[in-house]
Length: 173
Image (cartoon, rainbow, N blue to C red; front, side, top):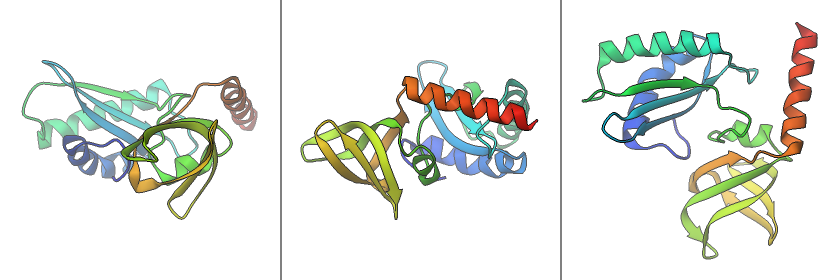
């Protein structure tokens, strides 16, 4: 799995678990690993429709836990946390940026451009690995490979859009 915000142990674990995650019908959003004396392995996933319930988290947790017990890729004890991305979700894949065009995001780059590494603004478009955002200072284009971390900002507009989407999904069921 490639994308912003992944460290080496997380990359290795993502590569190890991604086939299992996909076989269960989920998409891997992000894997992080780190923390104090007992580090946390955090796995974020969702169904292709963007949902992820408690039962889904429990199912994925059981399967990943069994795989991790067999493969044993981490040297020490750790906590396993499986979750949905949430409303103010991280943006880790090109399709995330495409899906959330028109919403506000916070973006941190690997290196500085124009003397800055952090940007906050509205996602205008994403095409050919180029993210266009509109900030208070104006329009800027960022290359996907230069993004270290990105996440949606919790706004009333985002909450309204998510609520409308959930109502539509409930009406379909």
